[in-house]
Length: 386
Image (tube, rainbow, N blue to C red; front, side):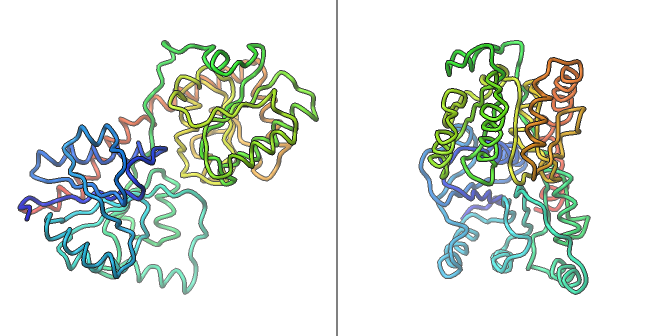
């Protein structure tokens, strides 16, 4: 048995899944760096271990394979063994529900505090009447709910309080941030050379999983409206990513006869090199956490950034100041924003500058880590008695 108290870090996906889980990996290593020298052990569990990310491999975090989302009958004895063997006293979860029957058993197994870091996108309807009363009561039942909740944006913080009815004193914010892109070292013709895009075209980029929720089909329909209906042959559309609906999106592009104006770049490891050589960043997701990493990277690369006007996506964008907002239900509105963003104007230069400045000053990964460290100080370390 481990005599040191253990902080259990729980991954929801297998170790080699990639995508935005690099961000969670940075959170795990930040927590470990902060607490290992305070007498804690940090244990990270994956539902399946394939390849171990380099940042985790180089850290002092212990690793085990354990499906924390397994059915109760399977989970219960294994969770008991895990908690007792490793002396688990704190658990850090990502995107778990605010209350769960498993939390009761974890507390019985010796866990003192459960923290949930919430990244799930989308708008929710505030609770009213009897439903609100029920939620308020549920959130105050000992053992049944998590102890602390970390939001990645003010939007989610408000959702904690007004939708989930969590007491305000249990909620914190650690705003999402990115590693700033060094534009001084950028090759401003990188994407043109890499993908054989004519240099006289305005390149519009979108990134993310190839799903309808991410709005990739909407992006393609904007391309069709501009290239075929408005005869704007000076645009080129670049999509970086893959996913379950990729073949359907490729068929949609072929059906619109856009092959010469649309590039499927696939899942890329060089997106940070690609972005500065583009001109417009377009984000069409039906919902986000508010500070989407893609949006922040567009802005930080000095792209004129276009996003839908739903509250869960547009939190980092002020229309006409740091980007453009379009009516999320209107293809015409999105196309109008693209046309405006493509203009060589003082307004667009100001948008490029202000967008980059805002990210550099407030939404970098170092700001995120600093906020997370303060939360750990106020929750785990403050409540530790050894």
